[in-house]
Image (cartoon, rainbow, N blue to C red; front, side, top):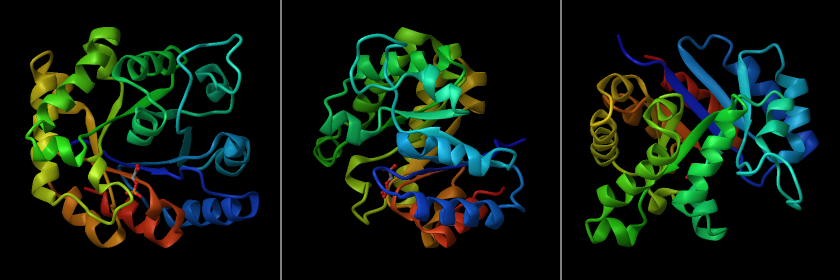
Length: 252
Ligand code: PGA
């Protein structure tokens, strides 16, 4: 039966009105023939309105890269899930490792952001992953279990089932170092087994993406692994031909 593919671009803090227009136009036309793969771009906040106006009515969906855990109020500089929903976002990345490490977001805050997104009918793309030091001291599974459990404890297993998970080993992000397909597969399998403790059905159906230096030339190998359903793509999502061919590689 198989899960559908899913590829999300994470533009991070890149873009300009002119460059975005070119990139979005190219992605829309280059992915027109895509079958059974969701194609999403997660863009910087100031460009969400532009993205909405370019993508509305196309098969490419859009989302944010972060969201506040609060819905409204005196939170200077924050952006709520209600606002993202207002601009047509269907997805938002929560718990990206850059948010965790550079901006001090812990598991509890990530879980609150996850919940805030779902309260506005936005699907969270929940990022989990270990640092190099954690991998080398054999803590990968323990770290990821804690990242997942924080969300399950706060939002519940059914809520987790309404999300997309992205496994992103911190040591592979933006470094050009990709996890081998087998290394990624092992962790994806672990994530499914951890979820299966609560619900076999959710474990089977949830889409789990791999992220960390995915490029056109390694995507297919990664995506053919049984528990890898697609990718969360940073650097390569800024280059239309790369991103398009990664999307095509996620077709079953
Ligand atoms: P990368 O980033 O593809 O540039 O490694 C992935 C991510 O941070 O989501």
